[in-house]
Length: 367
Ligand code: NAI
Ligand code: MG
Image (cartoon, rainbow, N blue to C red; front, side, top):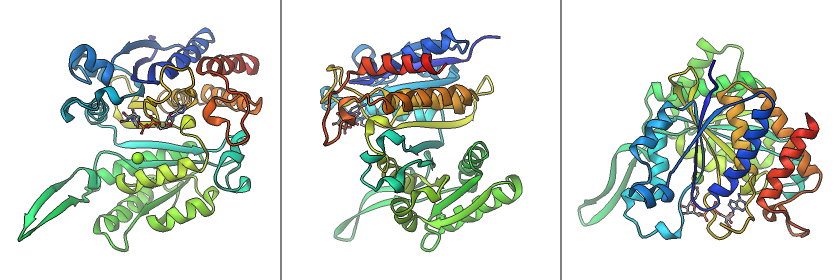
């Protein structure tokens, strides 16, 4: 049987720097019986420089054929002058759209060694492990009609918050499937008190739960209360299911409960692909960080944890993902920090590649 395939798109800025560390981790797994067929290609500004487009057709074809895509980051000041249609970010959006990645998974997980890094008290966040499932391809960011129109003697800006039953249902199934692998609890957040799309969201989520996932405990919460509860007592949640707009905001807020942008992975999943794996793209939440690019300062952990999510959610290799996360936990517990993790107390930072090496060494020592 052939190995599952991974397409790596390192992109711009610190993308290639953090991806080089993921390659070390992939090499370690390869030497220990878990192998992938890895190909690499260009995306974003790096693709524009060569092809005049941020996502070449042949790269998209490779992404559609791959079992998972691992992306670094795109963008940078050099490309700010480009026309909107060829901006690096368009490459990313096109990938999400063409792969139809409708479920965005954003974990908020607190590594014990970084609990004091949170803006909340240690006891509120220590041990936190929640997952936000955000619908990614519909809702107010995509609904029609949209635009800026003239009505009488003034302009009016219009966006449409629109969800079909099937769009809600597939996002809900993604959350319930995840809950089955985790703690079996889902809290769905909308504004059913003031929005019809929220009423439908609540109704459909409940129906899918009742008909297909009777083993899952589903609760509902208005999204504004959800925001309050996330900062008051985040550990009450396991999986949170929400729409595109609320998910954008709630996932950023939840992520910051646990500290640095350099620590945050994400996954975007779609329907089942050609080889039985879900269509999937894994990427750190952070961007290309032009202010530190090329200096060996970037924290590679967000990208490494994105690969860990690929192990878990694409390839059903939860044990290997646990091992990798334990290695990350170990280097942090040993006090190793890239510059972004130093905090006000200061200390000595290690480089991007030293962090990658330390995680591989930890994998070896825990093995
Ligand atoms: P950014 O996430 O690149 O950087 C924000 C701040 O966090 C910077 O000070 C940066 O140095 C720091 N930072 C980010 N990742 C880090 C890491 N791994 N280790 C240590 N420090 C890290 O966001 P910004 O500055 O708003 O955007 C820069 C470029 O990235 C822009 O062109 C933007 O469009 C693009 N971008 C791309 C994204 C993507 O590829 N998914 C997401 C966000 C922004
Ligand atoms: Mg956002």
